[in-house]
Image (cartoon, rainbow, N blue to C red):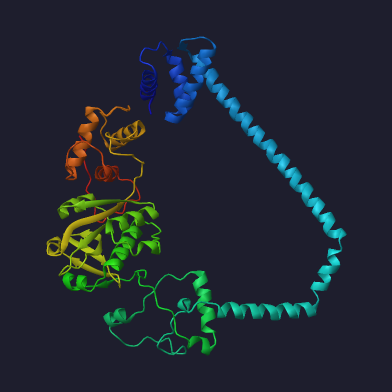
Length: 442
């Protein structure tokens, strides 16, 4: 906050504490507090509390510059005392650690450890340990679950590396599903290649119902044909993973969520596990388009079957790109082509960068109102004054943003309006799915 805003903030806090108080801060006190706190509310509260306590001890009603300086000096001295005490404790711990180490070394050498070490390092004992390690390695391999052993390729292992002469499309359709391989998985694959033939002939465990969608996309031509082949539970997990990957999230989803019957609850819980929030949009596709974020669209199937889901990941030149399904299929089409299939429901993962709490100003703390005003000033609404009051200038600025994004212009900052505000601020890390037009704020 600026110097003027710090003065207003302190006066407001005193007014809340007591409307008829005679306590006053001098200009020098305001200046000292501002220089010390650098406009940070938490530091302002600390130094003002210490200054009021000092004034109470001195039986003063006015906080002068000397009182404020004394309070700041006392806070600095306490910090130095705490730091020196911490350093002394570190020295004591280090001394006792060295002492214990010395005692351990003396006991170790006095107990004839060197003779025992020489015995255990003899060639005969080495051979025994080597054979035992081989036995342990073999037993650990036999304990490896068959569900983790990769299925052998239909081709011979010794097949040449030459690629057969096929068209590019055939190669794409026949390509195996590639998933990221970690170091432990590589080690397991290497062990499984050397496994006995008898172990490989045993029946393998049933694969899990849901697999991670691969990163290679296959184009599709007809949306209706694609939707009829999709599964509800897998489609929602695949679509959410694609959307969270665009956000740069880890996209970890527990298997306990797979069987949830409530799709909205599934999206909410899975997004929270990855540090994101979720906003459900009902209505026209234009509302989703203006928010300009990756979205999960719900599509209906023929009959009474439950909906399936695809991720909206790009909008360019009047066309949209959807992704999802077992093979991470992509399809490009016109927005009008969605109407026969889309249910008018979209789920948008989003991030609350500034931790604006509640619906402002209905059920939000004063800190959220101050943060909102600072955000509006950064966007370009310079007439908004920094204070904990939700005044008319703030309401009009919020309505302007809501009107631009097609949001109901009620002046209340809910989750949809927060998304629009973060878009206007152009905060880094937001994965826009199309080019975002620059805005001019009056």
